Length: 382
Image (cartoon, rainbow, N blue to C red; front, side, top):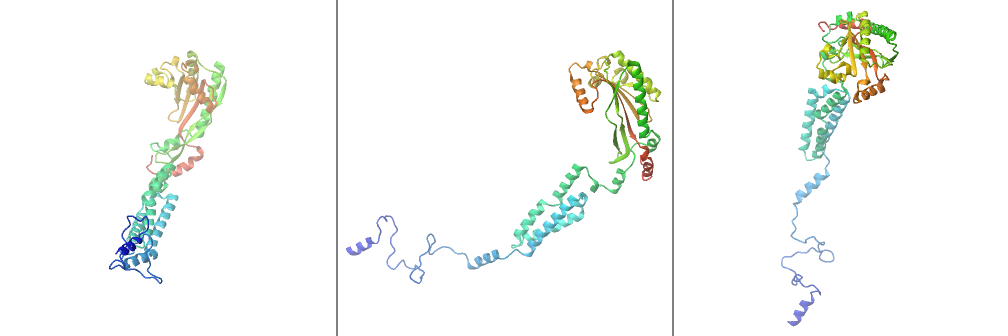
């Protein structure tokens, strides 16, 4: 009995205190061991030899087979349809076809593509390609691409793709909405306004040079600006701004200013214009003194930094301006700063008298025949 006890103790290794008891000779009842060619095969470290749950063989086989099988045709169709539809939208966007993007055809095509994608998502083997197709469709669809097209149209001002034929026809109206085209044809032409302005400037310069000894410099350039027709397009008429003329000498004395304007008034009346009208004089213009002070530096003509006199030859389109700029009436230096900025742009003198003419809605004689021909396409327009 003692020897058996010693044998039992010898089976433990040194330092194995706390180890589980050694199985009895022959092993536990009911335990099984796999047999290899040279003896029992021990399970790998960390893998239980028995008792571990195993998935049913049919399920594991089916999963492996599904992973090996490629995506079905429906998934590829969904992906190809979404990519093709995105390309169609982008080409339409680049072509500026905003109206086409929001048309019934595009909406119907998008519904077809979405239907194919949904069908692919319900297919086990087409689900991945269907998900990719869905992402493509979310990024490129009628709403997003149509919004991009609308922004592009707004930024460029090109609304050709969203206008009706009637709107396009109105845009080409050669005259100006609210203005009788016959009045345009009966009034002075662009060339006549230019010629009268040149004659008017020449006579004024000669008169003021004789009386006051002023010398002159030409300032600015002639400008022709197309007139809008009131229907979203440009008419055949233009706004004419003449070159200006300025004295090299300042005019600062109040009485001298009155004398200069009186001499100019004589000349413009001789040329068929009305008497000069003083915007800067509150007793003449009737404007609020606060507004006059804001525009001309003061509500008193004796202390104003700017005089602005005006006349016209209505019903003809010529409008004449005579302005005097006076730096001696500039207590805070702000007016000088503004005049220096203007001089940097145009090269005109800082102060003195300036003359210029503006005429709106004038037609060039070279365009008269085409203007009359186009008007025949617009009966009842004005």
